[in-house]
Image (cartoon, rainbow, N blue to C red; front, side, top):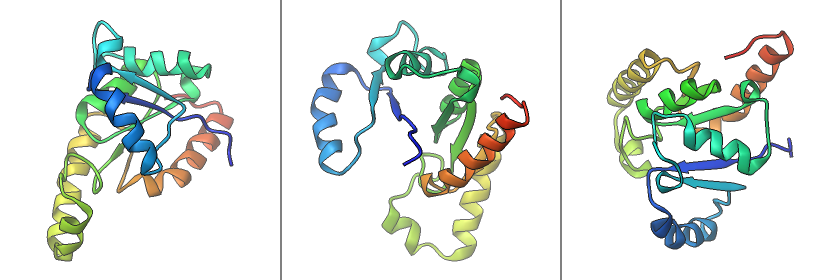
Length: 153
């Protein structure tokens, strides 16, 4: 709806993705481009996978692009590429639970795990730390407003 292109970076190699891409598509995940660790000389936290996504997507400038991830290496990749870096806590690797496991936690334990993940990802330099990609649309709106004011990551 907003004409935003989505590229995916993965630590997997191309041969693995040949199997996983159709499975992801069957579950509704169909990014406009994929970049694998085997596509570049150096993977995360190097900026090369993120930057190759921009080339494949034919988008720019880099300062208007957003790297979303759930690890310190993801945050660093976005920063190294000169992009806005958005880190995900509750639905990501730092908390490391399935949706069912997360929902089974008590509020205090969930909040504790969220806070630990958020602190680690913020210390890595994330511009934004959100609970899940469901929070991404409002984050993108905020980034758009910052760009309109002349700010850059």
